[in-house]
Amino acid sequence: MSDAWLLGRARELIAAVQRADHAEQLRVIATLDGLLEETQRRGEPVLVAQMLRATALARLVTRGLAEEAEQLLDEMLAHTKRHGLALLRADAHALRGRRLVLGLQEDAALTEIARALAILDDAPSPGVPLGRRASDRLLSSALNDCWIVLNQLGVYEAAEEVIARAHQAIRDSAGPHEITLQLMNRVKMLLGWGLRLERIGRHDEAREKFRTAASMAIAVEAPFAESLFPREAGVPAVDQVGVLAASLAFAAPSTAHVDRLRSLHGAQGYPHENILVSIALARCLETEGRVDEALEVLFTVRNTQAEDNSQPSMRLNLVRELARLSDDGTGESGRHSLLAEYAETLEDELWSLRESQIATLNTRREHERLSAEHGAITQQALQDPLTGLPNRRALDERLRTLAASTLAQPLAVALVDLDGFKDVNDQHSHAEGDDVLRVVASTLRDALRGDDIVARYGGDEFIVLLPGAPLSAATQALNRSVKAVASLPHHLSHGVTLSVGLVSLRPQERAEEVLSRADAAMYQAKRRGGNQIATSPASAADGVDADEQAPVTDPTPDAASHP
Image 1 (cartoon, rainbow, N blue to C red):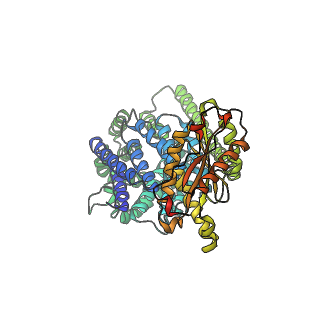
Image 2: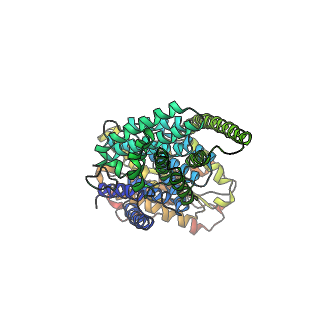
Image 3: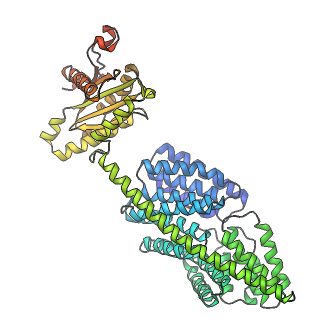
């Protein structure tokens, strides 16, 4: 199975799980979990992140499994941050927002979307080293996931901005599935928006939204036939997808739509889509005076979707439609007018709340952007630009912190110097030398323990801090690094090896003193041929026997072959 096949299969399963019954959804999730295990064995960072997204999303759309998505989203956030995958990290925040909406935590969901949009506002282009088309697809996916939450919250103006940006991202490279997804999403948004406008009496604007949705439903026919969505060949999309059929009915309610809507009523899909279909069907029945049937349709969907929290604004649309059809005008006139006035006032207040949500979103988005910018500036001040490791300033801060912490004791300190590095610069170029430094830095970091700290000290020297490590354990850890660098392919390392001076921090010892001892030990390793580890000379101040503190070398098996 190639990486491309794994990713393509995950996309197919995600398209299927959203319109499958519960038993089939569980089977899809089990398959996706297997694909995730396979990608994690391979270790390709972008593929792992995309598979984490797929497995989390499948749980978010499956009844009763949303909580299981939390751990996967936490893992996705940590993974994407560690590997610098900005677009996928934004997507993780968007999916977390979706999870929060399901938990009725709307304000927290808005914050997650603000974080996602702030990341996308400043994401470098193409964002990940996959090429323009793949990067655009990831951007569009993240924006779509942001859009879903904004649409769920009924913040339609912000949702419109985001989905337009998602369309722009894949305008030149979108396939049939992406085009279908974009059009169907916009249809759902326009129908919800139109219903919301009706609630505050703006009926002309609502009708315009419905007409636009209907035109998009017609436009989706061609790409739908080639999309990844489960479908019946040769059958029009409006006869298979509830929201598309509903859009035609909202634009022009009539009995001509009743049979089609009845066949799609209660079909598998998102609960809020069933609400749209139900309201559209009820309006078509109402045109024939079949109000009792219309009410039965609406009561049925209200009862079957009682536990759904995926789109609070859509449930309000359903309740309003029930209230409108149930009002036969025979109630006490004064009481009726007061209830109507109350409902109108409440709707105006809810509309004002929506405007407040938009302002809150924009404020938090700007705050997240500025915070990220400040964090990046701070990181740059503490990071070596060539290797990405902490620089000398960061090293000094970490060494002071660890020296003062009892939990970090014993603290081993190593100075690492490259053998033969001058020859790389002299015989090749400084650009080649920079490449060797980057490769060695990465190899050194990967071979050590998770809590160990590697910093670039300057030139071809590195400092390693090993908290909680006695010399014996530190020697083992550094031995892995020495052997790993010595085993690198020649075209990557140009034959450089490591000379390591290793010491243990003494009580009350200053940073410059411990680094000086590590430097002296490193030169011992150099004099003995390099490609090895040496500890500092014996000293009574160390409080150990001279035999234990005598110079120790641990040459790797091929040390003799290196100068």
